[in-house]
Length: 368
Image 1 (cartoon, one colour):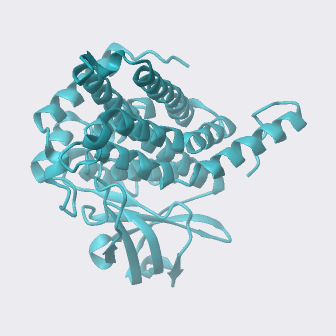
Image 2 (cartoon, helix red, strand yellow):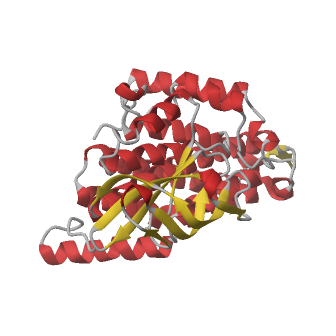
Image 3 (cartoon, helix red, strand yellow):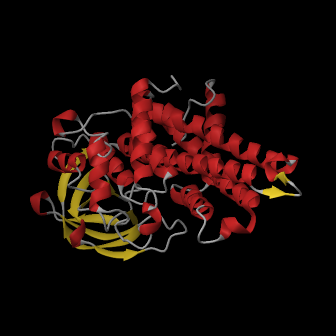
């Protein structure tokens, strides 16, 4: 596992930073927009190749790795981007994990060229059931959280039954959407009602493929959170160097230095976990992938602590609407509960450690 970025990856990161810097202020301007993006912004990401990064070349993409996708996610998190990139990336991974790329060729091509947007949910497979069979199948039920549904044209819905998992595609125009108030104002989530919605079967898979999809989404979401935490750390260090009290920069005070070091520690520890999870999504076996994702979930509230600590350094100004510090804090708080609580992640990691020790292979025997 190589933790160093290649020249191509550095160029990708630089291009993303330049594009997002040119669109600085987009997150605030779009806080009340249900889509979270504009046509120009989304087409700009498509022109960079960001939307088609996980799409095969035969459908107009570049077939990049999850590590490459993590670079995009990190840059978007740092910029507090509110668009549907993460949902589209999850859709690409869902089609790949379910062996449905050929069936979803038109959707993949639309994602790659920026003319289409997709979302995925629920990853648990609960709340939705098919009605009928064959080409005229309908879906009935409710999805408690469907991200970016207002921006998406298509929703991919994994459903679990006695025979395994089936991936369905439905038009979001056929769903009844209710916006969910979010702690993270840069995210768009909806409760979706499916009143016998026409659906198309794209592919079928086993439990391992469905679990792999959940782990993929966890890794990309964590990369986004690392980007937000890193940017908040940079803002905090700049403030500590410029803000003066008692005739000296507050960054010269030992207590403030300790707070900044603590933030740096959590960001770097989280970054290592994210890189491990992204690598495992590409090249690891099922046990490595699952354990890496469980560790990310366990570490979620530590990244949220980065936001809490930053507010201590900023003081009251960090809470004001005009300052971005609280938006980054909200982003991190939203991530910390997005895929389960840290307590659940810690229980999973602990159970894996116990099971591995009993099997004589610490950390490799995964309790499912």
